[in-house]
Image (cartoon, rainbow, N blue to C red; front, top):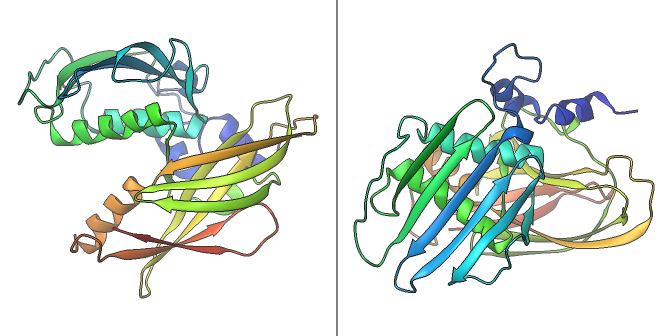
Length: 282
């Protein structure tokens, strides 16, 4: 039997995201995670790259489509396993960046050494496409694409959902082995029993900024095992992009000198252990 919080995630969102997607919404154009499909072709740059990848909400994965140069994946290879909340978060980035308003636009190339992107988005109700180099695209859209591009390296986004609480997210047990923070990428080594169902793991910032010095923020690792009956030991290294957290901090407190700002992530993991403090400097 699913708990109410799992029903929320079955509806493809936690509390804050719920307001956007509308699990019980009558809105006929409210996107659903399993209907979202984003395909991005990347070309050009100094290295003359040429590859295409997709975010497939139905399969809950980022998948390589084609790889001609400047890439290291096979067609059809899963680049990152995604959760419904992550798919919605990535789609929200594109929508907030105005992709529908730019439908059909090609912003051209600003310079020969920049990557050129051709982006196609659809959510079952609406389709939009836009193209342009990194410097020619509108700033917010270029930022959204930059976050999507990290999926090629298996890096998923952190979910910022200030209005949610831990009880809104699943907390199936796992073993936490280690963490490593390099730049804005947080790697978490975890183990759990399973093998018969897809497990969903989200890194969620919740509750807002905690005023202290340095500023702190609560971050939880949500784990939905979908009542997996199997007990094979699964080992995974999860990678999350913390850039959205840095951007939210800078929007609230201003931009400091590079390398001189530190925030403390109060990381809680469903392993019965204490909250871990992770310092993130930028």
